[in-house]
Image (tube, rainbow, N blue to C red; front, side, top):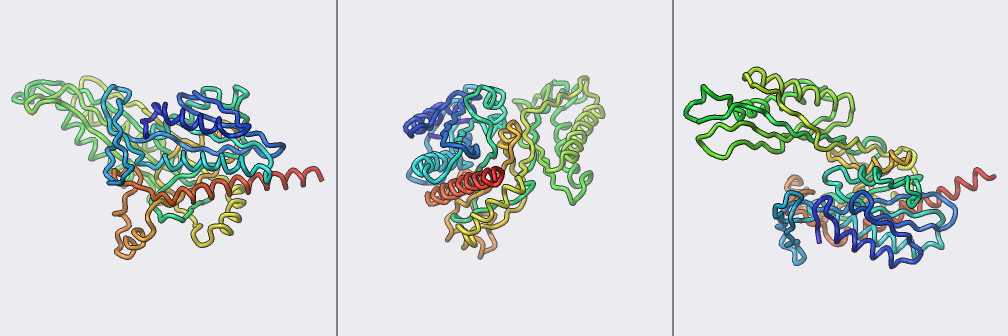
Amino acid sequence: MPELSGMEIETARLVADFLSSLEDFQVHTGIGGHGVVGVLHNGDGPKLLLRADMDALPVLENTGLSYASKRVMKDRFGQDKPVMHACGHDTHVASLMAVAKLLTDARGHWQGTLICLFQPSEEHLNGAEAMVNDGLYESGRVPRPDVVLAQHVDNDPCGRITMKSGPALTASSSLAIRIFGRGGHGSSPQDCIDPIVIGCSIVTKLQTIVSREIDPNELAVVTCGSISAGDAANIIPEYLDLTLNIRSLNPIVHNRILCAIKRIVEGDCKTAGCDRLPTISTMRSSPATINDDATVEKLKISFSSYFGAEFTDMEVATASEDVSILATAAGAPLVMWFFGGSDPDKWNEAKARGELERLPQNHSELFAPVIECLGVAVDAMALAALTLFAAGQRDSVGVSE
């Protein structure tokens, strides 16, 4: 039952009903849209927030699985869209529901407050902010956590867990740009200002920002995700629309890229003689995901013992997340890790052929995490929570003594 960002009505209802069936869970719904939070108080101890994102993508599933999505729903513009959990958020929801049940049944083995947060609209990078702005921690219903934990499926082999201290995911900004030309008949280009020619020049020049303006030692990506103009072959349109996405780890680099985009776009429009300045607006943005060093070190001990060689260090990923907003708003440390979803045999075969890039990855119509990865995800999140609950108890005993 995948649902588009900000439209997770049935998913939220399913989660809320499940949490309500668990003993002593306080369930809060409709936070920041369709956000759901379950709170279980279990004595004195740390307050841990475990987060899962719920939204899916407008992608037509082509996995061929017996349970492949055939869902079509109207987006916020009223257009019919196929919907698929192409980023694996269904595994996040299912595994956190299982963790809530597991920790409820095992509450004789830990003390503290468990907060299970199911977030809408992660794909638009605005769901966490919406929940915070809707009084997530201010209403008195949801306590401010001492630690925020999150995990994400990827296309590593099932069974593998990867984690790192410090910067883990990049900051992201998505921009909408409109270039205003002067429309007219294609037979008389001399009387027009062609925004398509301007737009093509801009897209090409944008590719020089990272290669010629950013230190090669810095991580940065600039992508033109869409370009749209005109409706007929013999008409020069009035305007052209571009959407861009930039990613970086360093906020100084991020700002430099934004400034370069503005300079290039406005400069090309001026050179072409446009009558109006282009418009450049930020559609969405999210900060870099920075894992807390001290918390990672605590989790590494448990994860290494439990997962053995399957627990490894991860590289910085150029994907982006908004979960850090939940932590920053609470003044709490954050740790996010990844768990593999690919069939291990297929992954090993692809590695042997030197073709790992051919494995379906997140956002692909072919992305299909194997069912077994759910067990790994449940183990990882439950283990992390139990580790930090126990560490919190030890710390409180040490303080009192």
